[in-house]
Image 1 (tube, rainbow, N blue to C red):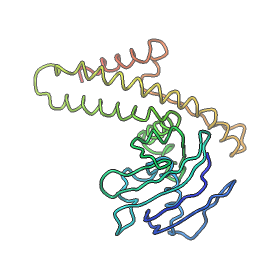
Image 2: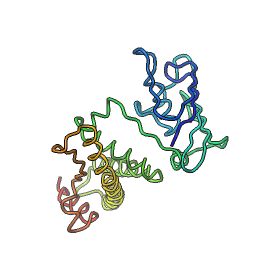
Image 3: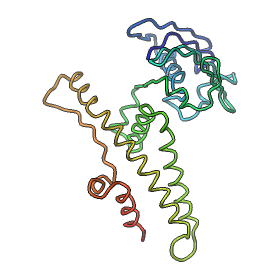
Image 4: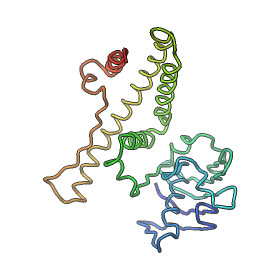
Length: 252
């Protein structure tokens, strides 16, 4: 995929900016605090419709304005796409691709992809497990855009099940616990399988790239996904392992 040009208005600290991108590598150079990273964030947002730095869009809109605008053209294997995004400080954003409205992120992500790498990515290695789960889920979405709801489905089932347990004041277990167990197992197995497949796709590439960059054949980078059900999954199947682990914690 290749970015041809991008226009930014009222995005972060950029009041108005236009960039024509030539072939090959493009380096953005300038003093600290001028908005180099903000420009890269705008490029990523144009392609992926989310920020790699913040969880909501409000910080993206320049102070004193109500909307930010990002426009650009990208060329991918499936065609050329004019993408226009209005990022609103309140309410739903507006997205158009080739002058047609887009309501789901996955509709764009089928044809346009992007990867953002920054200093915070070090947390994938040294940070909490949640950072590694986030990385895996981003990899899943990048590889298979239609599966972007897998992580959310599992989190929703987990929250609902936990709420049921916390609110239950009767003897024994809540009558609906079995149904939520089934929902948790189904969504958990689907997410675990996706994460496993994504890491299998990444592992050898990451190892090869590390060797190329580090130049050390005797030191290797190994990427493995080790879910809590992995040891039993090989013998009994992932779904049975998930059910078994829930049963082991039933008394708790």
